[in-house]
Length: 94
Image (cartoon, rainbow, N blue to C red; front, side, top):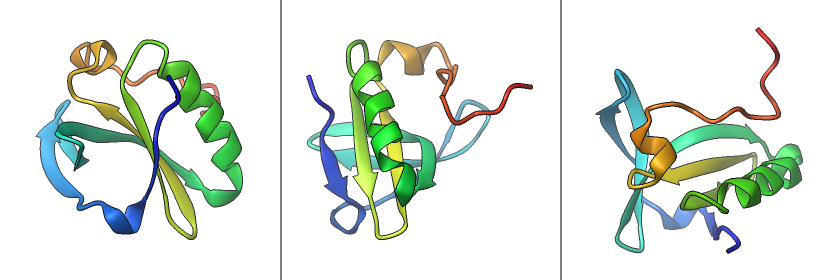
């Protein structure tokens, strides 16, 4: 299933406590999501490709603004329950 892409002007973000820190969250179609990553708009294709891979096992959503794109994961997804962020192709090795 392809992840939906939503304009950030159409969502209402909120803050909540999760994974030992304050997170950004949204509600979309009766599902709660938290923000995994935000990248510059020019990297939107890579972000969407990564979102498609994640969508094979998790419920994810992509939002866009004029300058950024964000990847969101449902709080009900198995990866969210493990309290670990998945590896992301934009991260530099530690």
